Length: 58
Image 1 (spheres, rainbow, N blue to C red):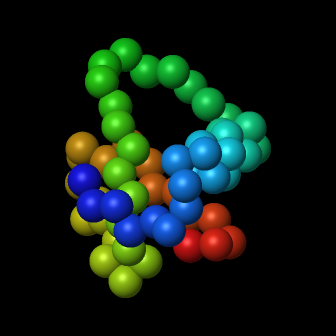
Image 2 (image 1 turned 135 degrees about the vertical axis):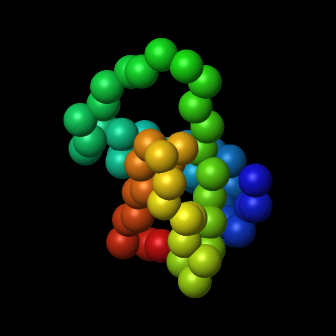
């Protein structure tokens, strides 16, 4: 995982909680993780990618 954020862990958690509260959340079985990527290098979309989320700040 590449960390490109200048936010503290608390700021990241607060921002992600806002995103989750505005989203329709479905809990799926399995192990999932969050990976942050630079705007200039978005993740490659494949069958292994569940979602890509972007907010006004990124």
